[in-house]
Image 1 (spheres, rainbow, N blue to C red):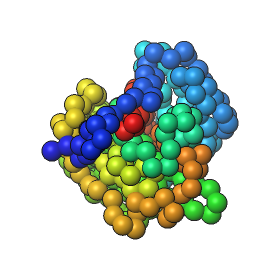
Image 2 (cartoon, rainbow, N blue to C red):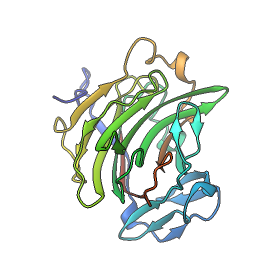
Image 3 (spheres, helix red, strand yellow):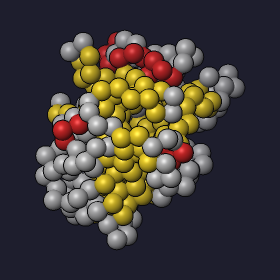
Image 4 (tube, rainbow, N blue to C red):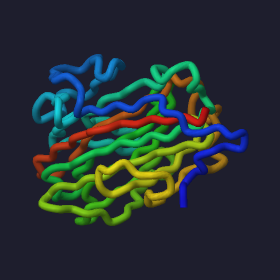
Amino acid sequence: MPLYNPTGSSGSVWSTVLDLNFTTQTNQTLNADGSYTIGGLTWVLSNYAACVVSPQVINGTGLVIQPTMATDWYGITRTAPLLKLFANQLGASVGQYTPLRIRQAVTLTNATAQYSRGFIAVDRNSGGVQSFIYASSGILAGLPVCSMETTKTNTNLGAVDQLTGGVQQDTLEIISPTGWGGWAWQTSYGLNWPTEGSMNMLQSTIDTANNTQTTLGASTSDWGIVLGGLRAGSLDALTCTFTRLKIEAML
């Protein structure tokens, strides 16, 4: 079943606010922490020193990130190399309480050891408040899985995935019917863009404690969509390739 009905009671529908194909962008090397223009938007690179080589946007391939071994995203730890797109760039129609659906297609190469992961997250890290939901593709307990983590639970809930020759391909989705407060997520194995209702519903974090804007944030400028990779001690020479990011709003 779909995680969230694609039409609201007023007849509103999912409208695309961003559909970024990294494989069609101009070649670019991200060679230091700071701001870069990708797809006409400003992205902020953090933890450049935690990359084996400089992240790159490669025409025909996508956004490529290779994290070093000592990299992680867990609880308040933010040592993984990552790119963040601040949500206030999504347009004036996307506000604090606008329902959102975010999908990211990712390929992992050399993903064979525990904790090798590529991830997408929605993150707030300002004003002394750190809140997030994180969905990842990678290795957990020796198995290729898609898993999730939130500020509230700090636990991994996974579904067994497919791994062929150390290559894992997934489309990850995180979704909120209430705006930037309460989130849930699901996944589709492979890079083919899923249709509504075809994804695997894995976990919901929507509850009375997590779905209020007063608890988790004030404005869209506080929030960001994050893409990154981590190894958390893994010996893999992991490569994370992000190919497409799509963000829709219920307008």
